[in-house]
Length: 305
Image (cartoon, rainbow, N blue to C red):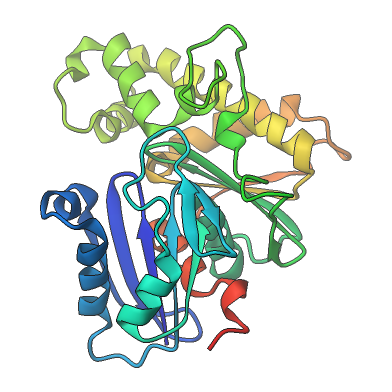
C-alpha cells in the first residue's frame, strides 16, 4: 500500500491507497491546527502515523508548496511566502519516523501527476495541470513523466506568468502575475470588492456561484472578468507547452459547470493551435485527493525501498 500527504496553503490531506490507487483511508485538517500546537514537523509526522496505523505501507510521498529539491528531499524555499519546513531534510525525517521510503515533490507537480495517472488526464501525452486554490499552481506531464526543467522551478510557474506588466506587485518580484487575479484568494477578494453584500462572509465563493446558478445577472460581469484573465494565462501556457489537455482543479473548480463553458470559448478563440480548438479543457476528477495520490505514486519512488 502507499501513503500520501498533501501540505497545502490552507489544509493538510492524508491518504492511504491500495497499489491500484483506490482509497483505503483519507482525512483532512486545517493547517492552522498543526502550527498552533507547536512543533509543525512533529505534528505532521504524528498525523501521518495515525492514519497509517493498521496498514502495511510500502512507500510514501509528501506534496508540498514551494521550491522542492527532489534530489535532496527538502524545500529550498517557498515561493512568495515563508515556509516553516524549508531547509529540513523532510525525506529522511518522514522515512525514519514512519519506516518506509519517502519522496518529496512540489504540490502542483504532484497534483498533475495524480490526475494524469488516476484521473481525467490518463489519455493525454502532454498534459498541463492547473490548480486554482490559495495560490495558482501549474505543472506539466510529458510522455508519462512529470516535467522538470534545469532546476526545480521548471514547469511549475504558470501562476507567475504576467498578464499585466502594469498590474499589481507580486511577492515573486514582478507585476501582474496570473495568481494575483485568478487564485481562489484573489477571486474571493474581487467578489467582496465588487459586491459589498459578500463582505464579512467566511467563504464568498460558494454563495457567489450559487447566486449565478439562480440567475443573478448582476454577478455576470465579475465572472466574465475572472474567465477573461484566466483565459489569457491558459493561452500563454498552451503557446509555451503545446499540451493536448489542460486539467483545471482546486476549490474554485467545484463550480466548473459555470466556469468552463465561457472559459473554453475564450481559450479556443485565442489559442493558436493546429487544428484550432485542439486543446481539451477539463475539470479535475480526483477532488482533494489528487496531490496526495500523486505523491504516493510518484515515479521517483519506483526504484526505492
